[in-house]
Image (cartoon, rainbow, N blue to C red; front, top):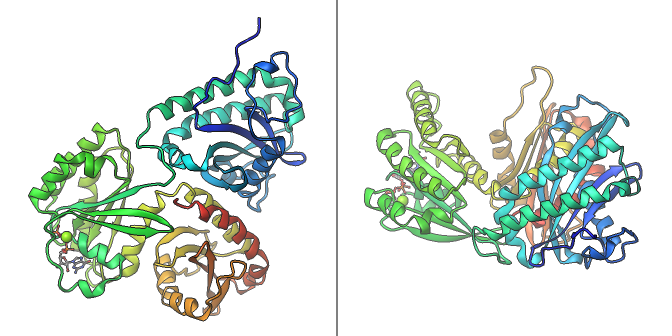
Length: 508
Ligand SMILES: Nc1nc2c(ncn2[C@@H]2O[C@H](COP(=O)(O)OP(=O)(O)OP(=O)(O)O)[C@@H](O)[C@H]2O)c(=O)[nH]1
Ligand SMILES: [Mg+2]
């Protein structure tokens, strides 16, 4: 009797899964399902299998893109190469000719036999019009995707599979696993968080007690300094759109007065349930810790109710430069952290100290929350790290036109050298954004514009401006080695090409 392995997932949004490895001949799709329409396989039960509208060459294209894009120049031969061992990257790649986006998991395994790391990817194809399924479900999709990839990796290691050909004897087992995997995805799809749409909707929430600096923070992000001196306590929730790389983000500024705080909890479906990030404010000058904890605990209860794992970005405000180093302030910060941490348990979080007099502190804290919304942050950071390491740079920042930091990486410098920190680097470079923008009006995306500063013999900052789909971006590179600049012009274009693909889907 024939086994019933029909593709039983007609309405599944994932239209194909492709497992690729960088084998002997470069990237190759080794296992995939459904089969490509021009597949040459013949199994006894072949007729029972769904075939796809994609062709073999499409799967090849996916293998090449999903693997090559993320390869960084690095030694693959060193088994103790911790950096490669720890690479578990998720991201979303564009496949415009297939009208699809691909949720991609990229990792390496070490082959004892080949004595080197082998890059691997698993790609899930979803139609562009259903992209929000991927963005909304990415966290739930990660575990089954990782587990399935791990199964395939172990199969490859055990049976020495490094190519599609060498995999052919194992299809029967693999097929059942594919079906199971699609079943898991179907389950996730059947419990959508929000309606599946073409456009992504993002909502971020600013909350905390009154007078903690929420509205000032938002004005600082918007660089509306003229509004700052006259700022009044907010008297109603303010709902305002922010255009971030072509995606609209709704910012909710909730007044901190007690009644309004209550309103958040009472209307939690509106304010909390659909939020993607919460910025929670605490005034370092008047922390009112008990009151703040009481409110935060209620917010957390609601989030637990919704089983929401959205990150909480704690903003400790008014840490102005002239007081930041005083013992009182340091103690206050420590106490705020400790007490608030107890409430949030294992929920994802991050603390920032900010002052409206340091734009960087505000932009950096704000960017962190937005970075968390990008499915491609890990990919961009991985490539940036590889680029820094290869060119012997210390620090790299990727910043958009409004000064939001989309990616930041640092490579450790050996020895006791003085290294500028990110804040210093940003503050040196940022005033030049406008100059670069004025000097070079070119919207030719092949051109990138450069400014170089040399402060001292061993402190060099390079600013590069480039355009992707009408949005301007800046790279800020920092190096201690003048020699490292030699390769920059040579290596940058290729790096930029790869980043471009990822930036296209940074958030939308
Ligand atoms: N020194 C200093 N003052 C700040 C800072 N941020 C905000 N403030 C001041 O703190 C006061 C309250 O700021 P708001 O932005 O109105 O606070 P809020 O959290 O929006 O208050 P509500 O709308 O009542 O919830 C204002 O007088 C601000 O000027 C800061 O970083 N440093
Ligand atoms: Mg306010």
